[in-house]
Length: 262
Length: 159
Image (cartoon, rainbow over all chains, first blue to last red):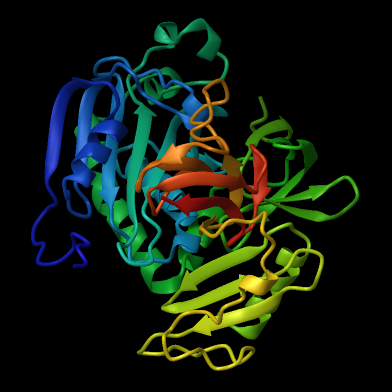
């Protein structure tokens, strides 16, 4: 009965390339429900309804970036599933470096930062509970590549960026994609084999704002403190005003001072 | 599931108003029923073959594999049903976006596979689905609040 989509697969996983769609995550989720295998991906030149966390929209105009969603069927327990979102951030950082964009840092949990501004983000959607049917996850990545400075909407100008804006040149989208997909599958394999310790180390090595003062918007209020590192489950460790170390698993993090604040 | 985890679950239940709790992990089922106002007791631990390390805190499970009847201790107010628990430590959301209506309310009829809520950790959003056709009888967690691994979220009474 178990169909984890990883039996007998050889060669590269299948890929669907679209000119435009509402959201690559929605396309990939529909494909996953039809049985798309581990590693199957959906790439679009433009999204008309790109999504972020909690119903926020993601600006993804034609040809300006990489908008891709990947179906994952990881052999891990549900408790480790949040590390899949870390795997995506680490893989994207490494893919960008391979495609000629070094110096990308990761703002917890998985925003891709360049020169202190956000150039990309991850939205992961998990289905299934891991008990009988296995876990199935759609991992969406959106990265601005060739969006010029004057093309950013007014409300994003101060906080968002692209390699074109920062260094005057954009990497080839397909070069980033071709590096990202195997890097992501390798990161998932690493997670499966060691429970995520190598992944967390790799994440911590390029954590944006390490040692800086941060404000974390939490359900019950705001946590202010110093970002001290990453815990074994990928959680952000924040030393609060009373000296207690707090573990943050969900919330919006803002740097208030220190390297790269803004 | 080891003794430490079970004692943690019992401690968590003692602080809650949950009358019935079921957790399945690695083929081991922990089922707790209690009368509210008294300390929880383990009503039955069922370990189907091949048996993992079965917790030894309960009397041997009945041959039928069902929990020992505890109807006498269950308050009439708490209906029989499936407890939906949190898959990991995260934040519980009752709607897909802050300005969107809740997926379900107490009293909502739900189908198997229907989304009940989202639990988020580190931008991984897990849509939690009902495992039965039924009716939502209880919602144990508060919207946008942290939930622990295994924390009860909903009671769904099968129809």
